[in-house]
Image: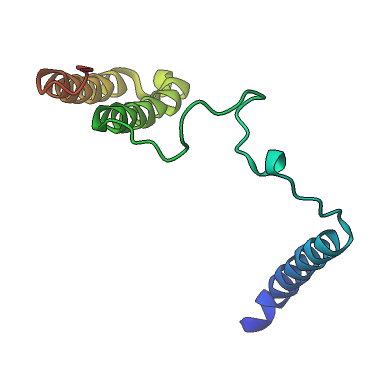
Length: 118
């Protein structure tokens, strides 16, 4: 059983060794001329206006998490749409239940004030 994994192990070892050798050669042969300008954070070619460690409001993270949650839920519409004709009425009812659950969640989040930006 373990013999069947031997080619995969060899591939992983060769890939890691290659990556290590490439990084070592690059660090040894590459130029090293650090300057103050090169050490500054790069923001699309303009000088930074604020420190990189500034704090973001909690609402920013809350809206971002809600976006990810509802975006991931929207992914479930694609497989359903592909086999919609085979599912017929059962598939339609199941998706309506799914959409209603999403709508209840969305209305709950909206009522709790998660979308208000102060």
